[in-house]
Length: 171
Image (cartoon, rainbow, N blue to C red; front, side):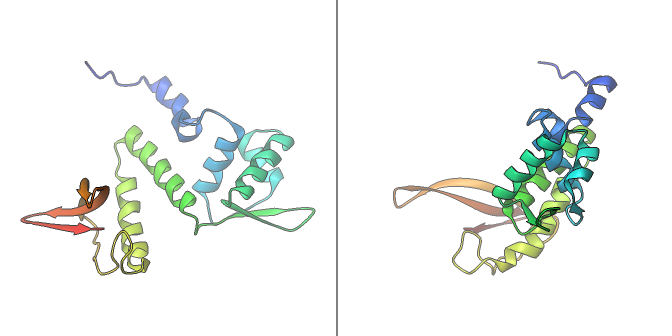
């Protein structure tokens, strides 16, 4: 099977669709793309209407759904202002997905850089005895592989650090 490079027109089209069309070209996908691209801003519905080109009712529905799911926090009552809850794992996952889509399209390495940063800053906060022990030092450039093995009759997924001459298991 041969790989055919996408035409420039096709690539341009995919770059115009949130997450390269993975979730379709829906209002909620466009809102998610905007808030993930700039998670430290505050958003008003009118601004998101302009950014996404969507109608007021559609944007309100998307904001309601994203607030209900916990990705957005609403304040301001009658004239709400929305902010991204960057502590949510959903936010982290959507950010990594956005980088993965970019990496696949542009052959860049944004996702690995973001993932290394996440490992350096967030994994040390995990309590001892959790899936990845806090004592395991994660460094930029570390490589891991996910390994499934059977322990006491259960299937267990663990990450193994792989490197020159050493393998260390986490989890």
